[in-house]
Image (tube, rainbow, N blue to C red):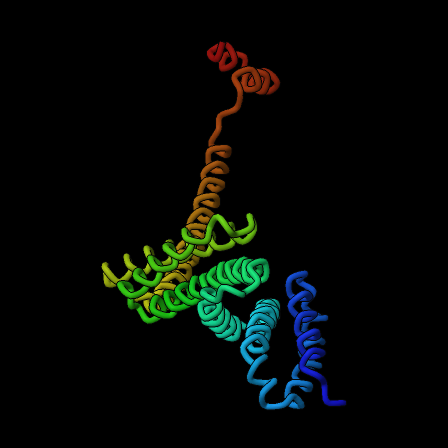
Length: 269
């Protein structure tokens, strides 16, 4: 690259500020790359004269670049990087805010994006915090640490109410159902612990059920046998009664008449 004149360098620098003002940040970055190479070729005197203006251009451009990196981190779900970028944006903005020469439209643009990204970070961080409290409550509940499980549950509820208005209907319903199930489980586990009920007793109850079933089965067999005996006895009695049953009166009379026992037949009339 040929050694640039001070006037040419200043012209390129003005173009860079113009690009920033128009929010044409891609071309502003291209201008900066040319300026960075040319700056080293300036004389010491020229560099000293243009140094402050050139550094201000770099700081304003860096603000845009940091905002761009913050958006990238947000899309990738990298909350740690997003937090770091937001801190850098905050510090750069604080340094540049009192500079009279700064281009206000550019600065206002960065502040607007910073606020948006900060809200986005707080929202995503709150979602992560909510999930963390729920998971922690589950772990403590599994270890029968009811009091700490209640504390984690309470913190999850507080976080939920802070972000509920920003949640979609589906996500809101999902979080609500998660909290509801956790509350029911904590309440139920609390009763078990309070009454000293050991869940391990359940297998013993199953064994008792099997024994009871066996006894019931035997009883049912005995009852069946008894019923069978009763039926047999009823049948025998019925036969005995049928044998001793007297003949009908008219049949007896006819039989006596056939035999010629008229007198006996008359007595039956």
